[in-house]
Length: 219
Image 1 (cartoon, rainbow, N blue to C red):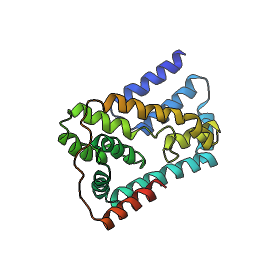
Image 2: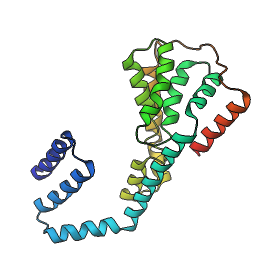
Image 3: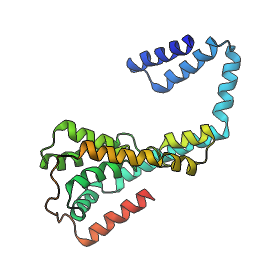
Image 4: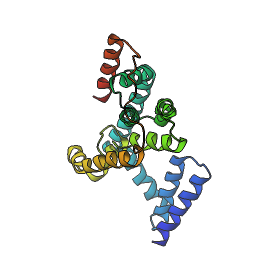
């Protein structure tokens, strides 16, 4: 137990000093093996076997493809047009405040919060929300899908490590997503003004194009 605590403490210390996460985890794994009596050659051998394992290669490929998908959608999906279409279709701005980050959360990508933040900022300013409330809404509703959406790397990792079918994992964790949505609505959307004026941001063709992109992205 002390050995594990030492390694975890070292990992936290190095990460707090902004060391590269990959290097820190690699160092921690090697140190853990040495502390538990594994010879260095065996640690290296097991590391190579794990790195070349088919499950590992599939996991790496899945994560890379997910990241690539997110970046492509970020570049070509005309997010601002989607939001304008959404505000035209849904007049209750409380619902829009939840839908925008939740939709962006369906596109796993680095810096996704920065993509939805300006949209939340615009609507939140109209509703005179505090910066803390806007940050909370953006963060919370972006992450409600992490328990069930198969494009999240963590879910793919759990499937590979635990050997549990993805469908079973999703069904088991579905109540967590429902609970997160309800909790976010109760805590974050209370005492916020309701329906506002409908916006005519884009025409019918533009709205249809935006909805097509939304549906294709989620699919």
